[in-house]
Image (tube, rainbow, N blue to C red):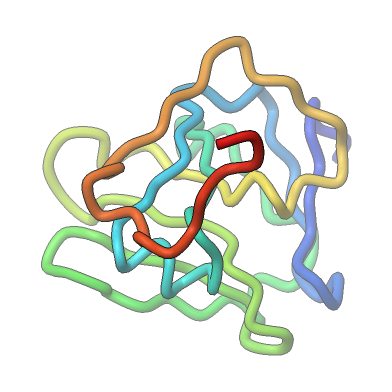
Length: 128
């Protein structure tokens, strides 16, 4: 099935398609996102769960409950962070996609940095 956007993990064991463009694009600086990505921040866009199609490798996806209400999913083969979602409450029917896993070009209309108060102190953006 072709989607509007397609993506995969590092080893390509997991491949997915989104049937609509990601919304609510954010760059999260919280410690869980930083540790999960191994980076300064994690970039995500969200779609209704019904808009995410796993094309290959569903058995390679491991879920980890990082808190009472958040489940993070990653590839068991290569460790790539793929998705996170709320297990209950508002937006439990949405899933956030790690935008670095997209194989199809994507340009966000808007984007924002969240939990910037938790950003690492040792990094200075270029030009500062």
